[in-house]
Every structure is written in structure tokens, then in C-alpha cells.
Length: 115
Length: 114
Image (tube, rainbow over all chains, first blue to last red; front, side, top):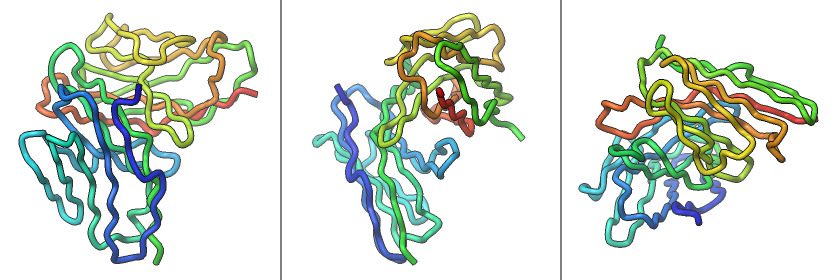
């Protein structure tokens, strides 16, 4: 049972364009929704994260939109740059309690930004 | 610099051999995790430890073993019982006292079974 579904699997955008990656989750007990960025041969690193009590969070060119009723959240990358080319993972986790830190990940989206 | 160090970065193993992947952190984090990453798939949890001398199975623990004798160290042994061990293995840590669920990852170990 996949608790976090991510789409698309791959995405190609032109430099300066908007990249949009979507995720849907099933377990309403999740309380923390991060996006991780991973470059080839490296470990993932936190890009941006959101809690379900807000509908949007923006950090520079990166924005998370969160729809609690639809159990969906998305990552928007504005003015996409070739340096943004990487694999992006959405995740969902429980920050507290016995399952704290156990993150469930989407399958990842490989983003290619063409110059 | 604080962080997570995984070694070796690349490892080749013959079938039937056990191998141990090292994970060391100097972030003073209580919780540590091992994830497996396969092409086109997300990260899947193998084992995790919330505190020293305690660890729990994740979603794909069969064929793996861990120990947590020190706060800084969480080694993973890939045993010969693991049917498809070729993969990229990621170690992560998290502060239990933190207000977020952020995981800090190492750079990974790529295991290839010949």
C-alpha cells in the first residue's frame, strides 16, 4: 500500500519556466510534509516543508501548496534554472509520538531544466 | 562541520557474503534511520532507532540487521539472506527534540552484488 503518490515521474521544463510536482497522501494522521532535493550520487536534502495548518509556504523560488481536504500538496518552482535539475521527493511523516520521524516517501520526480 | 558520514561510498560483494555499512553522525541526534533507494522508487525504510540500545524494524527489514551501541553510530549489515541487495543505501538522523520531522541524510553507500 503506497501511502504517498507522486507525479509526474519525470519533468522537462525550459529555463525560466514553472515546474510543478504533485503528491497525494492517504493517512490523515501525517503532520509534516517535506520536499527533498537529491542530486546524482548524493543524499537527499530538505528543500522546503509545510504543516497542515497552513495552505501555502514560500521560500524564494520554491512554494508548497497544501490542500488538506483533498489530501494533496504540490511543489512549485518558479523561474526554473538548470541548477534545479535534480530528483525531488515528497514525503509525509509524524513529528511526534512513537512513529516520530518515520517518513513515507513518494517515488520521486526527475526534473530536467533545459537552458 | 556537523553531518553524517557513510562508508564505504561504493562496495562490491559476492553472493553469500555479509557486508556492513557504516553510518556515523556528529549532530548529537538521538534518532537514526536506514533507507534503501532503488531506481525509480522512493526511499524505503529498513530500520530505525529512536535511542541508544533500541531499534525497530521498518518496512523492508528482512535480510538486514543493525545495532545501536553508541549514539553516534548506527551500522547496517546486509546479510546473505537479503535476496536483492544491490541498491543505494542512505543513512539519516533526526533530532527527537526538534519541532520538525526533518531528516539529515548522509551521501549514501552504493552496494553491488556480483
